[in-house]
Image: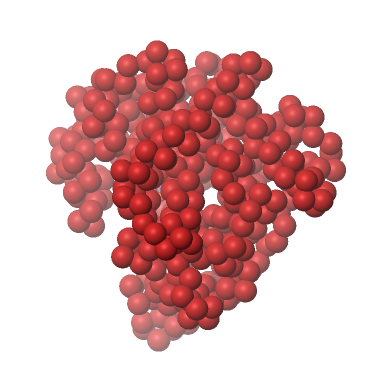
Length: 420
Ligand code: NAD
């Protein structure tokens, strides 16, 4: 898989540290406090041996990084990907700290991953690596310690195996994992929450800026959980989804793509370029610079760089993926007047939905999806307007405003606990 994945031009950890350093200066954080917030609390590296179906042994490496727990138990997804190394997991864990703080959720930040290509594994092998990983990490996890969730190449089924393995050692504990299937304590609405939440924020932004979303041209990179839900929801609002891609390539239609047809193809195990919908093929590079109003990177990190930022035509980039824009590209976009809704805000619907699932598991109670969506919209709108007000007041980017709010909250919690 991923022979066409973007080549990393910069360590994601270095990129996230740059954003944090900028915000630390903006909120005048003392250097020693900033240093605590720039480094991880705990980094666990484990061996994940797998006996393959053909009898051979594969030894994969897995990681769990707990970045900061001042505001509550660590929280963050699990990624199965050949690029999921310690550097990437560390950066993603830090992003979770800033995201949960910005959304005012009672969590810290963590992330985990296994450096493996899951497309080469059978269902039995996938279950086996998941159980081995869960058991080797279980001593640092738990409903009030650290709660994993799905991320790239992991889904509700993987979370069910993970929860089952954890529970085999600690007793039935649905709140130890979020993003589970609904029949195992998952929350109706959680699966859609990241993409849907991004669209709630775009709607709030459109109202604030006096935009009409009808007919707005949308380009989406990545058509997995996040990208496909963004496409469905924006399409339903009357926007025109003109191009989407997955790891295999992109499709374009100036009149708007048949989003339902694309979703059906992918749900049946197909890929975006194979979909039987009217389209012209586009390459990954072409897709990002197609003429559009709203660009939603929803694949992997580092896809918008100094090499293509000048050619982005969108007036809004809403970051569905984590760290899709490098700091150099971020500066270019800001100088060009392109608005960027940063990852820690734009894709915060996922962890907010996980928070709802966790609270429901603890209470052994289940909300209807309607209540889930109403509460999701309210929390995301509040976070969006707080960021917009800060940015308007200080004349800074939304990213700097989002990090500044988050850093200030985490530093206060750490200080109040007596941790720093
Ligand atoms: P997913 O595995 O469901 O989908 C990933 C998609 O990206 C797939 O369509 C894949 O084919 C595509 N892709 C991979 N490499 C690509 C490339 N080079 N060009 C174009 N497409 C490519 O993952 P997801 O859960 O949708 O996550 C996508 C992004 O959103 C990740 O950055 C993830 O960290 C972030 N995110 C996810 C959640 C969540 O709840 N799932 C929450 C917050 C953030």
